[in-house]
Length: 330
Ligand code: MRU
Image 1 (spheres, helix red, strand yellow):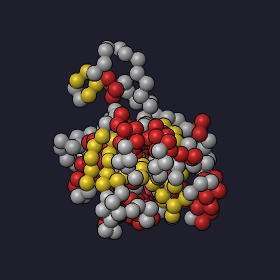
Image 2 (spheres, helix red, strand yellow):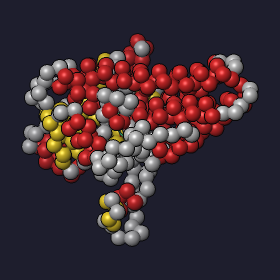
Image 3 (tube, rainbow, N blue to C red):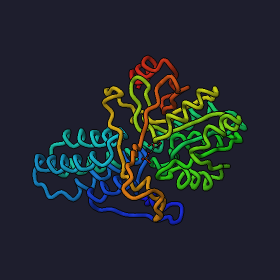
Image 4 (cartoon, helix red, strand yellow):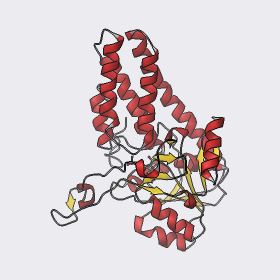
């Protein structure tokens, strides 16, 4: 995988041969973005299967369960990780013999990677129908190829719009404190030849109020059956400002990002370390021992969301009904 902590200064590929290294990579944001950590988790399980010295189905399942426990604890909010690990465990339980289990786990991880790419291209296609030529689209955090296996969700919609011949511009927020917007989104969009301008997070109100934005598209880490969307910290305030100014606010995410069981209060918001806020690079930007609140995600309520773009189509309010219908049909 690409070490995302080194971008944009260095493009470094890292290789892992142990699931514990994969767990550490997820925890330290070497790989991040909901679909990317889901598929990375699946490959972590593939490594656990490959490296297991178990002789019986029972022993192998125990090895896989312990790998799953370590991988699932790395990041609690993005539901794609749990979704991927459950899917791997399901195929492992279905087989009878050790070599068959190992093979099935590895093949499932590989097909999840292929499917993720196809899924994003479908999201792109549906989403691009909502975009007009000459639109300026604001996005937050990074929901691009780096955050997925390839193509991206929110950035997939932007890519597909360009590929269909529309002229579009993008405004990317910096996305403090880890700067996924300035480090990753601008890097990806420039690479794709898409016009992108970077703004500080604090300029969202300014650019929207000056009519510089036509639409907003973000990704998601978890979407509830009620249409509540958990995404990178700062998403909620962008949705509020968009609503105040009548700007459409879209979320692009695969069906694997939906959590049909939880209620808003059940979702754990990951709290990250204080140093992400008290330093920029090696430079200290706050007094020693200052109290810090550093949630990685926030929740945007359904009434602020114009539509949710999935690989099976776009759902619109009222979300309880439209999401239920979407899952019934898929
Ligand atoms: O903390 P991160 O960088 O993993 O957070 C990522 C986001 O919030 C993305 O918007 C989300 O995972 C969607 S990625 C297609």
